[in-house]
Amino acid sequence: MSADKKIHQLIEDFIQEERSTEPNPFLSTRVMAAIEKKKLESVKQGSPVWKTVTIGLGLFAAVFAGIAAGNLYQTKSEASDVVLINDNSIENFSFYSQMGNE
Image 1 (cartoon, rainbow, N blue to C red):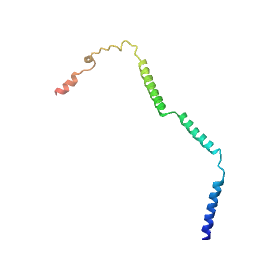
Image 2 (image 1 turned 180 degrees about the vertical axis):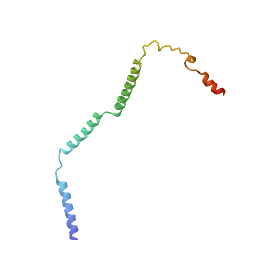
Image 3 (image 1 turned 30 degrees about the horizontal axis):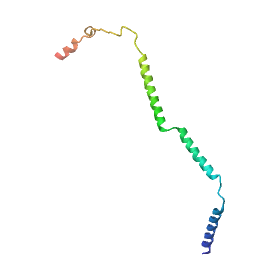
Image 4 (image 1 turned 60 degrees about the horizontal axis):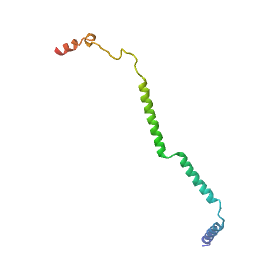
């Protein structure tokens, strides 16, 4: 029992000593500074709305640049405008119709 009383007395002495110590007057200032620093870091990161708008504008710019690049290519040859070919003189299609009649 004596050991239990001694442990209990040590605990009580420790609690009284902690209660009697003076609090640090700068602790609240440090805590508030840390909170303010966290707020400033979150503002610097940017809001999700601005990130979404930026990604959307970037995607629009990429699509627009692709369409503009595709429209730059134009054929200048006038021979490619109209091509008239007589298919009968190129291939003999009668060969295929003869196979079907056999």
